[in-house]
Length: 533
Image (cartoon, rainbow, N blue to C red; front, side, top):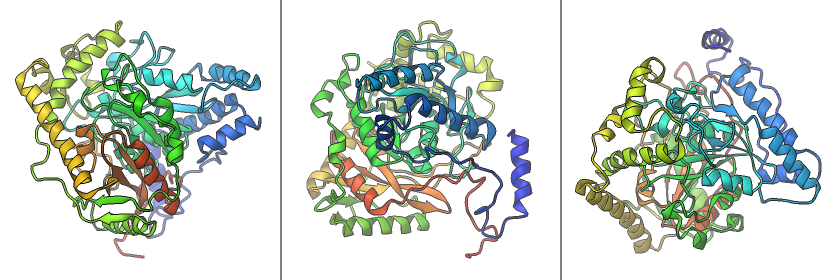
């Protein structure tokens, strides 16, 4: 369906819809999908019992992606399907018949964000046309770990171009290569960013699980907006080698899934030390089988500090109040409220601005040797030459600001990095230590806002910045819906506490089970007459 047909179809449906909005409207015939909501364990059991094959899973998910992106709602969430996926699946099927199992993801289709390098027939572009056909010489560590665990890398997901680090007026989910990704709960709403396609794919059951990356909010925010579980690990638990960077101080990859259990399986497969990423030197000491933390009684006796954010609005506040009541009913001790010291983390953006130039140029040299761009200045010039396709909606102010920065030996950078990172860590550690907290809880972010190609993203607030700047773990899990739009609750805490956060999030998820399949509705389920029904 092209854009004009979409507008005509939704407009024609409007007359037949009641004052309650789009609920129940048959504007789109959604084909039945037998893998809707299937967990990793479900799929693994189907494979072991010979009731399906990895090849069949690849075929089914590929058909789902094709329908969602090309035939049905034009979700725009997957940039390409791996042309080798079926052959890889066939090999894994053969190994399974011979009773050889590589790991916990054997035969399981996984989608990965298009800033994670793969040395195969797929592209690795961060959504930018500048890196088309610049083939990486080897797999990123994350891709290699997936293959070792037996996963089928099914394809690459759309994203906010350059992981949302190009413009101060960017549009989340838009890339020059892939166009606009939409929120599967309401197609006129943002999927948030920058792991937009990965979150949309997990939510819409286009894969078993997906991989996103985060610098500040890029896993937890789209997970919350699309109705998924997202885990942003401690920086250093999962290697960044071969991932197109923003900031070596804050970047990490992590799972996006429909359930905490699936995210835990995926995180265990990704974690580990990598000699090519110095930040992972301690990873093997902390990596674990996170499925052992899946305790439905995991909230009992836990001490949780309650943040009271002001950005969310009354309907989200009501969801949060209900969530806190669940936490207390499940045996958690709520220390309410807690807050960070005044002063915030001013200057954290300057750290990213310095690091992006150095880090992206290192990536281009090591991982994209055949690319026509070698420097950030080359990327800026490319975008200027190709402005009609690369900058039709927003410019590249962040690129230009980064280009003007000095080297990483600049005293302003060194002092600023140390100051903001120390402030973030001391804030989280201080709250946890002073109150004997197992974790801090907050609202992940507000409901998804309308996609705005004219003015770009509107600031909606969120809870990602302190754990992001500290490099500490952060888990979001669905907390409920506002007019059909998902909202997540966050659990974050001190470094290397992934197992604790997973235990807490799993117990909350099991007590609530609020997530449901996305509606693929044209817009949010808001009463059109403005009156309560």
